[in-house]
Length: 166
Image (cartoon, rainbow, N blue to C red; front, side):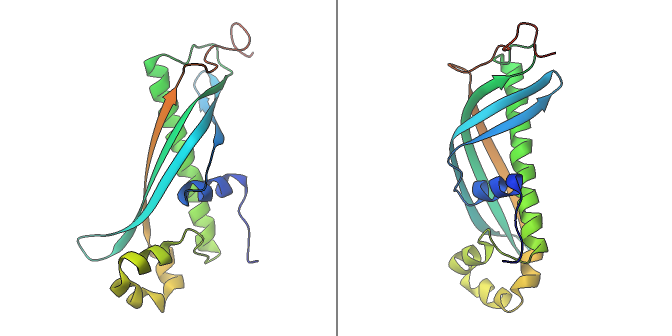
């Protein structure tokens, strides 16, 4: 073993490798914390050749969930609040994936499977990269797209305590 990931980095790795089956994300809003439960998750990681011939990785993550907890004094099911929660959820996911990738690069460990994906989709490029993969891995760009669909029905959108947690 050459190193380890912390809890959020592990979750970032699970999202990136399509192994996240469900998760709970706590987001900080201007009104307080809201807990989002993601009940369906899928992701795909694909190498993409750019116009200049270099390869970048494209990670697409789709999440489907609802509001699990509301520690604010706001009703979070309004369209404006749902849009804010969706954006904050995206930011958490992107941050955790990027943190996991930074840790993997610091350990020179391709735990995301970039090399295998490049070998499979671009075998000619892989032949050139394979010999110096440790160096090439640290320079491969990652573009992350996160799509979150939040459903408020049946979920906790009103504060537990009238007036919010104070």
